[in-house]
Image 1 (cartoon, helix red, strand yellow):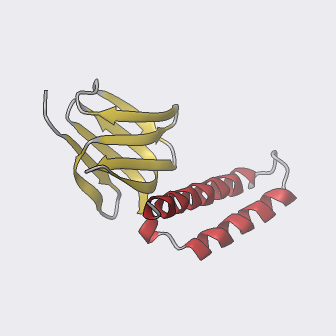
Image 2: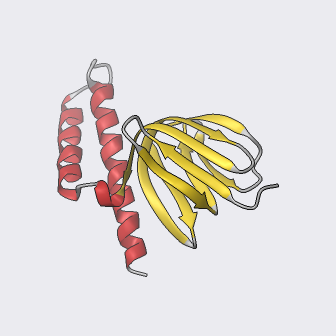
Length: 141
């Protein structure tokens, strides 16, 4: 069994992260899953949500997805449409996006053809805010 867990987070634009970590947590389409060294190999669809890894005792958070994850005993490869660290997220912009999505959803019924678009926009804004809040929480320690 390998001694280190390698993580790669890849988007169409860039390699968002590549390095060794002690653990990874991903939001899969069937729920959140965690990976440690020696994990059984599997493939999973990744939903837009929080992704984090621990390196040298510190957690790093991303708002990431959708895409796929491949897990082997010693490597996790995550290929997603977007992966933003808290540092890359503009809090004022996200608050505005959240408010706009909530306002639009309040006017629509669930059977409206644009409902899912605004529901997804709201979910993305909420995840991005959660990632920002977690970063703020770790900075206080």
